[in-house]
Length: 222
Image (cartoon, rainbow, N blue to C red; front, side, top):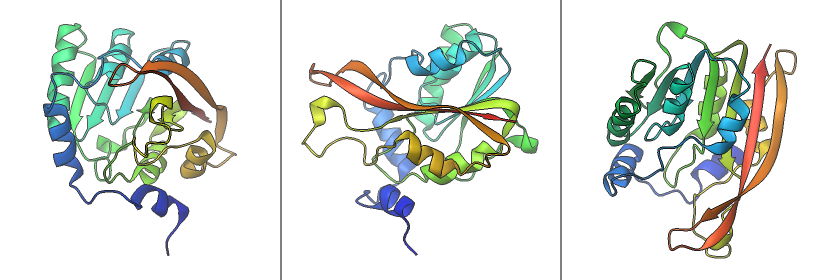
């Protein structure tokens, strides 16, 4: 049976190996991302006391290193070995290598050792133009949030203004309601702390000024 989730995550998606795609993407430039924390994540996490954290799809390590610099013991899992190497270099350069750890892993099969749970699990813009079992990944990893811990999901909710009408951009966008539906949380054991969208100014690859609309979902385990 085809579901909305299946259509959204598999319709019109190139049949390309995700690991090869992302290794090539990261190898195409010295740095793909800024190396800085996502501002929306920082705003949500700043009030929380440090603990253990897991970042899903950690890229070049900006979020993990930011967490580690603030006292978190943070682990990032990323499909691309190229990105993981850069993340480790960033941790060393910023002096947080004792608290920031990076693993090359496929989130469809990798699971925390010994069923470890975390005080914070994050997924920042876990979106891809090639195959990504995003909904099942988010749902599966929600069970690794420790009691009293949080899960934070950031996503592009729609294309940036400079791509409007072009048909380009990530193959799927996700609203807060869609991510909450993907999580399928038990209301007796989870509290929705936040589910909304924010606007942020950004610059396109050719210098175009524009705006992203991003989804922010924060849930807390009882």
